[in-house]
Image (tube, rainbow, N blue to C red; front, side, top):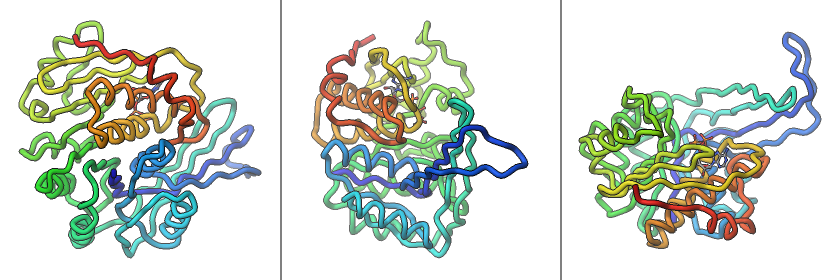
Length: 312
Ligand code: ATP
């Protein structure tokens, strides 16, 4: 079973409108409101693939209650730490033939006490889970090393942790002695983290970077490359994963879907090839759907077979 942690979930509201009028009234007839935040996308994709998953993290207020009700309705198991603040809304306005304008709330401010309560909840929850995903940004008010603390707690219980974060919270993990089992940065995130421009034509620089102190002790590093698949370090070996060309409908959430694939396959103790093929196939399937963090399981086998893994 997989435990999917999201510290700063959101209710993702999508407003499709023909033309966005600035400084004017925009009316919207069809609204979709989805339990969101990266870890909830991970949980939904695992559930769609018939895997078992429990979603956890922080939720609060009426929006938190709405998210819990939606997860219950969708039969996704959940157990959240409740907070005093209100969970955030994230609004995406889809307009003018393919344009997307977003308004993202920062979310509630939490305290060290909230983090301690979540750790106590994890202590009870985690027993049944072999693989734990930690996704997204930290809530305001939490220390930058919050993920270091969670990974330390989970590593002590021999859980395989997949971390999908960026910026300061990921840097804090890379600079500590506490390492997750896997990370899934995209190319931009790796460049931002290291300050090094990466060339896919000459991977020597990237390879030596990943063999350096910050990354070496992480057993599995999957650098996702959008339509170009992924570049992977497993132990000291490197792999290039390529994917077929497809018609992309909406690529948002593909990273989360990729993490769902890593978690599902790791939980099955699959081979490295199967882990990477599952992750890439699910990332790709997400791009073929309108909804974010959503896949059609009926297409899985076909695209799984089309993903190629090559040692380089
Ligand atoms: P996001 O932040 O939108 O969730 P990401 O930047 O973390 O995504 P990407 O590298 O864009 O992650 O995508 C993850 C995986 O999804 C890719 O490795 C690939 O398998 C699939 N994917 C993403 N974009 C495309 C695309 N345009 N065509 C085919 N597959 C794609």
